[in-house]
Image (tube, rainbow, N blue to C red; front, side):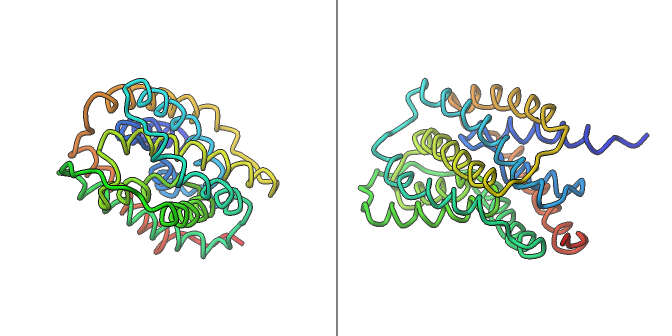
Length: 250
């Protein structure tokens, strides 16, 4: 017997929230991939992913903050410019075909990060040049608002690869960064007068439960590499569906 697409999507959202929140992320790229797999239109995907992001990022922020995995000095330089640009990106509605292509690239990057990020080593923490942080925050914020993500998939590797944060610390900062950017993005989207799916409450419940479980586990230990690789495969499949099979919506 075939599973109803809404039920399947609810289950996928639960597992995405659980996995992503375990590493301080809220799961927007996973939600977008899941919605692409079941054929949700771009006009619905973007605001829905942002709403779920806000809930899960809020839960993760609290959990990682309580565990002592947060740095205000690391958080504010990126956030100062990311918030207004995320708002701008949320207000802008891209044509369906352009949105799918841009989303496909973002999901491929997310899949790469999930698949390869299995053995990160700690490195001495370096000082962040303020102008670099402000510029990066603006760029990440704009892209996040346009796509409907919180920007954690871009901020986390940047912080780690540049040696600006330790693993646990970047998880807490990323969670809070995703939260404020998702709020800014959804406010911009509200001004563009978009609508949400009627089944959103069920997805909210699924993502919240997954976020609580995942963030409690992740604030105490690192996520499972095998699960991350499985999710990476799901993202790649979603990209193929977006770029090869999805019919543009006008």
